[in-house]
Length: 208
Ligand SMILES: N[C@@H](CCC(=O)N[C@@H](CS)C(=O)NCC(=O)O)C(=O)O
Image (cartoon, rainbow, N blue to C red):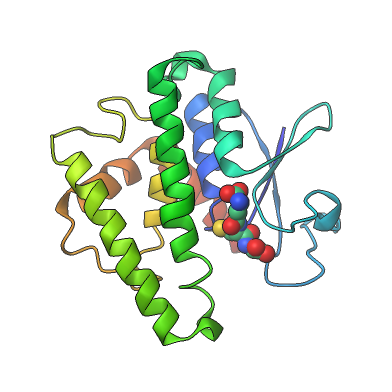
């Protein structure tokens, strides 16, 4: 299986999940700063994902799987004993999908593009930051019952995705000082061996 990724972007989420699940991945980096988008092997990424964004997961039979939220569930289901996703069909799985949808639409797409494309202007960035703060307040209150992770005591793919997006906070100048639970969550997830390994691998490949 091959993950097309770009360092430090949302493709970190499936990268973490694969490591947590013990699934070996081949990694192929995509330069998302240029058009056409060329991968490290010189391939035209438009042939993999016509939408041009990462991540994309290429299965061993050549199937291309797009959209991070689907991809992480696919990976988790390959390793059910990992507990990364509750069983399909259960209410807990629906709760997981609810969180994945929340992170994707309420957080990920509030950070990106607004906070990473200065051409949108300061006013758009202010609106995005205030929207993110409101959503973080919701996460903060959810975590305030002492739970370790979004679904409770068990780390799931939704936590990998939430961590990936919130890890952009410093870069995007999103102030987390009012969100103690969120900051503790970030530190907890950052300390996981699979998360450290995913970050280390992406940083070392970026330096090449
Ligand atoms: N809906 C996609 C969005 C992925 C996405 O936003 N990827 C960003 C990096 S975090 C990207 O590749 N941006 C470059 C572009 O859109 O051209 C998903 O959730 O998988």
